[in-house]
Length: 493
Image (tube, rainbow, N blue to C red):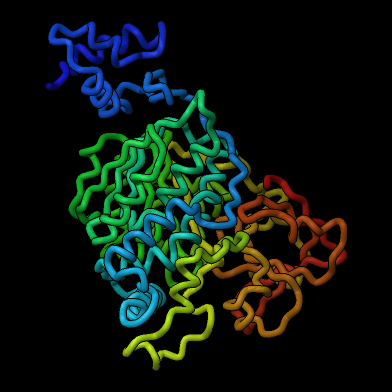
């Protein structure tokens, strides 16, 4: 038996401000008296359009329109309920000893192949084994990374509780699960979030994604579309509040064309979120897309983290910027695969212990807004601040500048350590949105007046006074030396 949708809407609108909507009561408003279970199912199906959330007692109430506050996101591991889903699929496909023998070899080979393809920018192909290997290796760190990105929006009260999401290239769902858990952690039982989640995932990863989404709470209305991004029509689901491209830009044939088309579906006060691994190839590829979309003459604004501090300017340096957060614990399934007995084809790989553990949380991201809003409305002053694009004329001089901290301490990172050798001085990428070549703040002498450089979070806006501008021939970059004569203030964290 079906329910008259028009009558259902009229009834809900009549009752919503009076009392909780009980499916058992609503049936009395219909001539054919549908069963309460049918009414409940219809309410769930139309919940987002009707702006209703279901309570634990089975009644429905109006969803809250309030934004969420940051929940203090800092996961130390992937939630057990999600690991159990992955392990169940592994056992279903390979048996209880999935991490040993030939099945373990297949999974490890799939992870090696995926890592190599990402590193070299090759097209990534998923079969069921590759999807399971990807989940084992990347689900924990991608889950953690997504929540840290959402903090940028929540701290500014720009992440609503009622959210329509389009997740392009959702994969096995690490970012999606983080988004859902983040919103629920930030809410309470009386004002739960209402999420209409649409995933685009044409590969066999969609099977695992659907299983994982089944573990999410009520009021998450999820649909997985098994279509390629290039073929899907985003207008078919309506205007979205959050458009995400997580760890997929490098896999698109033309990421700029595709993301530009999808941006048309974002609400004026909505957000496009792009996330990528921190390695050179994918992180700089993300910045190329960001810069192509956020054109000064037209296009969305860069909300964070690479703020444009000078109006109508765009950076053109390499753009390798990324954040690093606390490691997560390796889940048991990672340890099992790493320690598994090699089979007939796995004995010659020479894997070091820990090869298949992925506990570091390092990522590049961009948040773009159609309405022109930025995380902080701060601009540099031509009377007070040196512009990064004009750094050549400031070499060997001490200058003042307004800039954004765009990396952790790179002297501690493997990639930068190879570039800078054994330099013990902390090094941070910085930029004001006009830089044409790389610029780094190099801390040569700690003082109370410059400690903000090291302590400020990624994406913070800093004021630097009396920094010494130098050209680094070896790195073909500008160094802004921060020493005992330099004052660094945190303008906006």
